[in-house]
Image 1 (tube, rainbow, N blue to C red):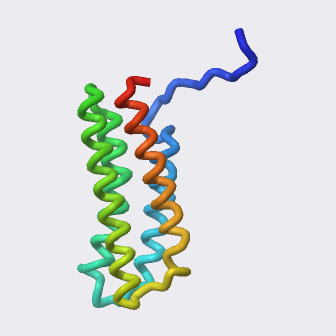
Image 2: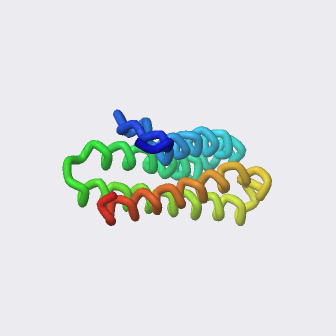
Image 3: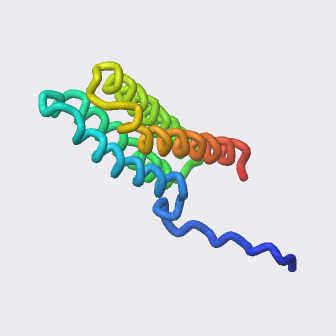
Length: 128
């Protein structure tokens, strides 16, 4: 009818931009965590990696749920993991393990993922 292209339906959670950006964040967090001292192997390093992975895992798990409320629940958990990751990055900086420059790419991606998660949650809550 109009000239605007119709969106193709999503075939998988892997088609979600928020999941794709969150996967980019996982990669960056792994790179960033390698700058931390080995003494943090079972501390901040593992916590940062677990939190970053938790974002993608909960987006995927929520997508696979049948009810919108369940999906929203898992997106809320993903957001909690994002905030946990931000907190761990801040702590790593305050402890002198990483610099602002070290964390800039991860931090920017985290902010982008947060906005995308919020937009997805808003969209689901409105039923669009």
